[in-house]
Image (cartoon, rainbow, N blue to C red):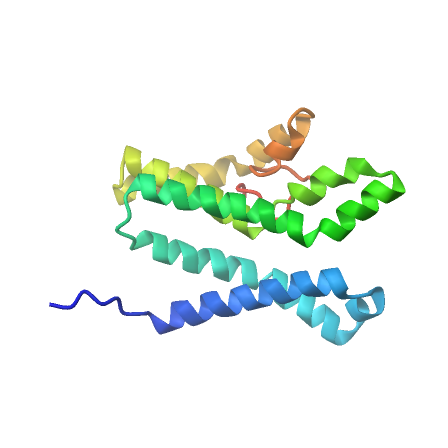
Length: 188
């Protein structure tokens, strides 16, 4: 009997489209200029690469995670790879900015470039947390209760994180309103 995996066309297409849109917005941010950003094309490009692309990516990821047969340890390893890959991507995407910050004497801006909270670190942290929750209990009611609790506590968590000045580049991955934190775990 064949154990060949079948692909689900719609989620795969949505995930691929979201990834392409997110890549194009990063390329545009790196290579574009203010005139391009303010043009109709630029505004549409920036919008599509941000607001719809990231939630679609995370929803499709959640859909696939919901049906994965991977054990929690394997999911955690994937989460660590996604998180680390996101940090590496930040470094590679921002190498020109980092060099510029060093040359112009603004090294304070470097950590925000490296530890920018983008979609891959969010995906990695989400996978690690979901794996941990599954290790505790995979019962759907438990997972729904945790999701509702997280949603209800998000404003308080963000307010609390904003008051912490130490470890701000770490806490920004979890919440708060840091300018380099685009996709923190809370409220996502």
